Amino acid sequence: VLFLIFRKVIRIIALVLAGKIFTCSHAGALRKIAYLCIVWFFVVSITSSIIYMGFLANTSHSWKFHLAGEMDFTPLIIMFLTFIFAEVFNEGHKLYEEKQLTV
Image (cartoon, rainbow, N blue to C red; front, side, top):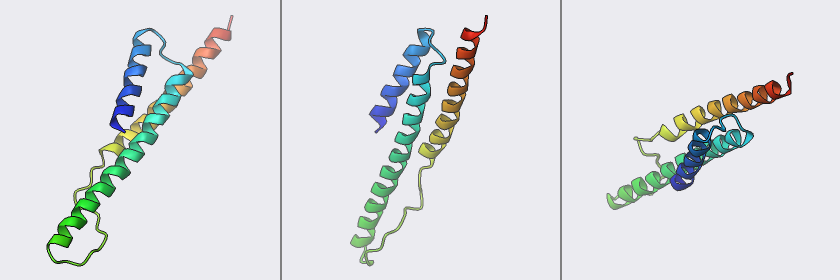
């Protein structure tokens, strides 16, 4: 998941450095990054819960589904920020198209 996120970020940076800042593909790529961050959050949460359950099983407690007390909310924060940036790039693309149509 992180590899896909980094690959999309590198592609966006390469296009921005090439001078193509407000394109429709940027907004779509940022939305995909946000969705990948949701997947990242759930994968990390589930795996840490399974590991935590394994520790509970080894300490003679009954098997119960517990969420670990230390959840990492970094992917959710990144998700919210990338959704905001996606909308900014989408609006910038609309303004750029309007500018191109004006005489």
